[in-house]
Length: 190
View (cartoon, helix red, strand yellow):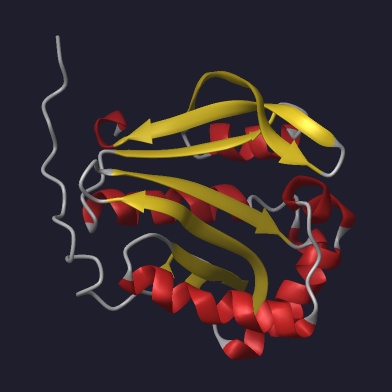
């Protein structure tokens, strides 16, 4: 039996909204601010984050990265948020790609080393996914990660993202091409 189509926001609707702050019981997920540059530089200096993102950042590059997010919101191609715990940036979550007409987005995340192990990423992922379904009226949110990145697989599972399969040699990382697991949640998953 085919799934009923969920009405999606027409293009132009996302950019008409201010990018929100999203609150959970103990996390604040807010748009990036220029003052967050040290946290971004520290994140991309972490060997585990570098391994999966293939880059480091200078202070100027971090400033440019932060400054690019409002344009992506206006262009309806993406949205990036800092994840704060006790008023301190501990991670990031973003809609890396957004397609309002098709009703889907791809999400990515990382957590700074001293905040790992506290389920910050799955809580942030669940909150942004719920917001995406309720506000953007997306039908599908997906993520992919290297099959070697067991921590990201745990995050996806804890946030209710079903494993869909493996994309062969789909992601380039610091040590070469990796097979990637694909996970998704649908607005009908509950």
